Amino acid sequence: MNENTIYTWSFSEEKNRWALWYIIAISIVIWFAFWWIITQIYWLSIAIVLAAGILFYIENNSSKIVEVEITTLWISFWWVFYDFWKIDNFSFIYYKKNAIYLKIVLNKKWLKNINLRVDNKICEDLKQILPNFIKEEKDWDLTFADRLINFLKL
Image (cartoon, rainbow, N blue to C red; front, side, top):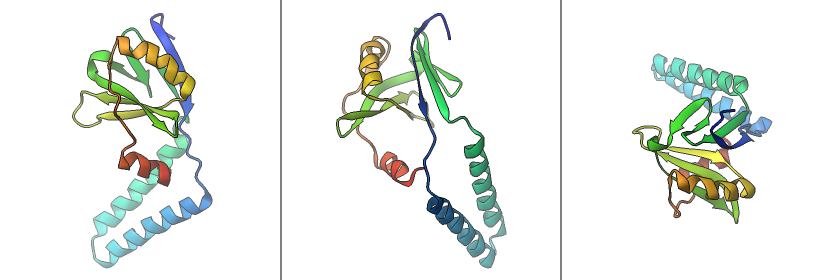
């Protein structure tokens, strides 16, 4: 912990998937690989099997707990530091009157939005801290992609 630390919290990134989810995912990968072999697109079938294997390996070997630290200089999570000047704004996303995400919008071209899980207590604490460093946007909601990712447990 840094001497400039203002607030820290952690949350679990573990996906609670049932066995049927894995059976369906493996079936889709095998079907696409088989289809691309039949249509003689061999490199694509190899690519999808490799990508599925790499994603499965990363999922099973990555840390399930994400530590978030807010200091007077930056926000850090996943062992990456984001200076406040690299962050455009932030917002809290609610679902049925419960805070579920702190959405951070970065000034980057590719990875623009990052969702960090929060609860109502963390949300209230951060509402006192973050506006001192970053602009708050109030009109954010879960996007279709966020809803789809949550529904499919990706």
